[in-house]
Length: 390
Image (spheres, rainbow, N blue to C red):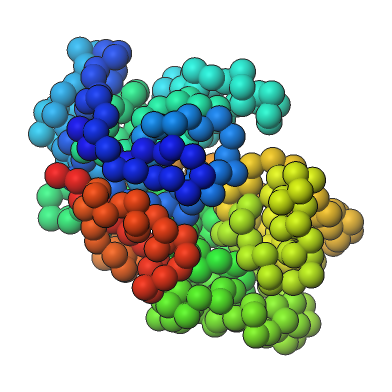
């Protein structure tokens, strides 16, 4: 089959790889009808995530049609149309039984490697390094889905692929970002990053009762998309974000701040962001946490900082004194997608949101390597790429 594969920094290829096969009775094989490039895939392209191997199949936002099921899988049948969560979860362990599917204790066969890095291992992920399981991803014509009697959700008739594809990752992640803010109604929420996850966080904050959303970015197309969703937009290259948020909130600060950027914040946004970039370049740091620092400073006393941007290692110069002395709550996670799927599918069915609004580019797998570059470099108005392999 054809698939997008990783061969080193800035080297993404479309090439032939072996077809997936059933390896366990709970598996399923899906014929991929739509998949997407995620912002976190760019961290792989940029070479900042460890334990990638040449030839690894990329992608973790995938849906398609079931073409084969394992003997122990009674949930799915051939012909079912499904969306596949990016988190691989057994459904039976301590964490899965409590709804913390992204903390699954069984789905990462390389848990020891993750434990060395982070103390404990999260769940295995599709197409996202050998430290997180070494699973082949879904930017391919076919995908093997482990624990397929737990993860995939069946798509009702009447919904298009593009309406439901983002249930695999960015919609639950953006919704979780807003959910973590514990909104009661009437709040001001600030969102750093107007990429696809940030766009979903903006929409979700309004769905959950926020009165105002302040969106921080510098890319014109992304800022315009945020405006169309009702957000007040700050261009961080033109305005001092802290001063602007202080003005908008009468000096109190935002009730909640969402970091939807993560490890690769813009390296020229401020003096500290430039220092972060130098530290990474000289191997004195692993991440660029400028956005997280700013979110903490911009949050009101006893507010919430919600972190859904991906960080990989150790963060430097985080203002914990500010967070502690002002009573901030900090919440963060890899999204337990399965926990959110039923209610989010329901919101799509009710017409409360159509996640396809973020799509700007549609392509084939063969066009994928070039579109990785377009997406990373924010060219041609690119906000979200969807590929249709079959």
